[in-house]
Amino acid sequence: MAFLLDSNIVSELWKPSPASTVPGWLKSSDWLLPVVVITRQPQALWDSLIDAMAVRHGAKIATRNQADFRHATVFNPWTGVEHLPGAREK
Image (cartoon, rainbow, N blue to C red; front, side, top):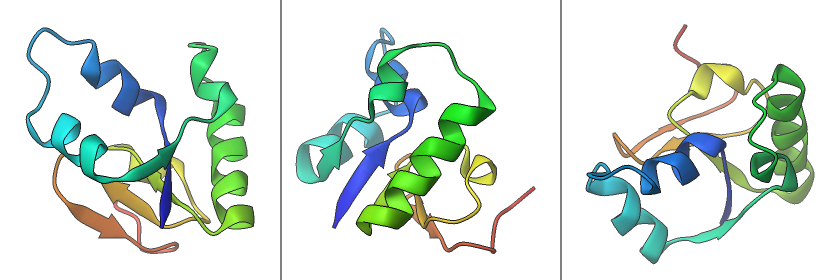
């Protein structure tokens, strides 16, 4: 199963002391980086595009902002918890 990375995964790696779970998870996972994440201009539209790409390609979204994605399965590398569509925390 491939994961589409949200921008907060990438920005975590730039921190002086990233959460230990995120780099380890990245090394052990198959992931893709959507082009909209590279733009660094967060917008609700970009989250919608990532959500649609994940559904279309049968991928999951890796993020800690699971409430931003309504249609795809979301995995949070900080907690190790997977959230199914329609079962989001607000």
